[in-house]
Length: 67
Image (cartoon, rainbow, N blue to C red; front, side):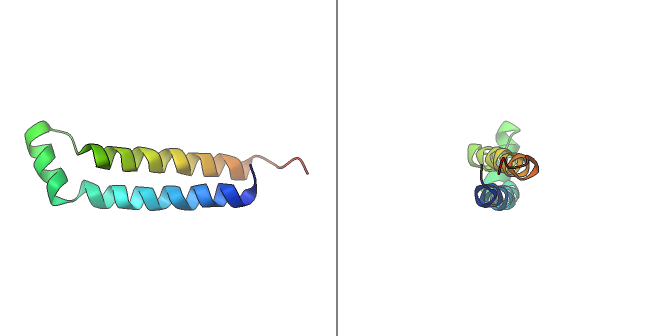
């Protein structure tokens, strides 16, 4: 994995986590949590995708390249 892809994954993961946090505190998520006890599926997918992308980017940056 090249450094550029790793940085892009890290930045994309942080952006997804930001939007997941914003979605978590939205009115629709508050209503869903009131009735079901859990946030909306969109919120869960944004946060999970952000975590996976951020971890993939961090792992890609920490593994030394073979050049």
